Image (spheres, rainbow, N blue to C red):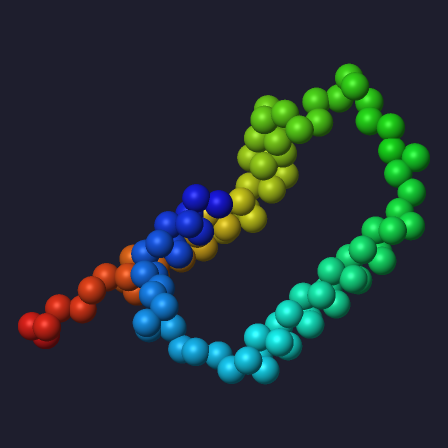
Length: 103
């Protein structure tokens, strides 16, 4: 999450450089977001949570079992995602770097 904040910070998005969108696009975005919210509410309205009884003896949500799973079963996707995050950070730094007028 912090990496994405740094990427957004390094992009240096200003209101002056951002293209202005017409009101029709903004209205379509609000309508789409409202419809998506309606779908989420309708999908979660009739959900039945009575069959979920967590076992208090399990180590659910602790760091040790999560790390064990990440570094045994999911080591390849974990490392691939870390490479992608590093590439995104380098790209954000290059995009955020000011151009020199010499060359």
